[in-house]
Image (cartoon, rainbow, N blue to C red):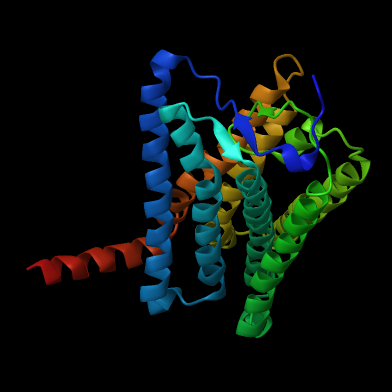
Length: 313
C-alpha cells in the first residue's frame, strides 16, 4: 500500500469500544446517563460554591476548578464516543483528532495537578493550622491554579506541535474511542523518538510529580497525627482529608491496578478500560464523594433546596 504524507491524511477512524452490536443501545443509554450525571453533578458543585459564602475558602476554590476540569475532561471524549456508538460514523477529521488529543492532555494534566494542589492544601490545614490563613492566602491559591493550567497547556501544546511535524501512513485506523497520542505515534511513518522522549518527560511533570507530591503531603499528615495520636485528631483529619483521599484513591488506584495486572490479555483493552475509568467513572463519582462525605457541602445543598422550596411556594 502506498505511503502518504501528513498533508494527505484528512481523517482517522476510531474503532471505539469492543461492544457487540446488539448491546450498543444499552451501553449508549448507560454512558449517556453517566455523562449527564457528571455534567449536572459537577455544575451543581460549582453553583453551590459560588452561592454559599461559607464555601469561599481555598479548599472549595480548588474543588470548583476540579469540578470544571472534570466536566471538560469528560466532554472531550464521551460525546464523540456515544455519537460513534449510535450512528456508526467512526471518522474524525485530522484537525478534530489533533484538537481532541490536545484538550485530552490539557484537562488530564490539570486534573492531576489540582489533586496535588488540594493535597498540599490539606497538609497545611492539618500540619500548620494556626498559619493556614497566612500560608493559603488568595494570591497563592490563584497562583497554584494558574500554574496548573499553564503547565498543562504548555505540555499539551508541546505534544501537539511535535505531532504536527510527523507523517502518517495510509493506515489511519485508531483502535480506541478517542485520539490517543501513543496510538497516533504508532501510526506515524516518521521517526518519533523525540515525541516519545517528550511523552516520557512531560508525563513525569504532570503525572509522576503530582502523585509524588500527594504521597509526600499525606506522609507528613500521617506522621503529624501519629506524633500526638488521639481519637479527636484522627476524626478531624479524616473529616478534612476524607473526600480528597477518596478521589485520589479512585483516580490513581484503579489505573495503577489495571496497569499492574497480569500482562495476559489485550493491552489496548486495558488502555480503554483505564481511559474509561478516568474520563467517565471518576468525574461522575467525584460530586457524590464530595457531597456525601463533606458536611459543608451537604449543608449548602440543603440550604439551596430549602430556598428553592420557599420560592416555589
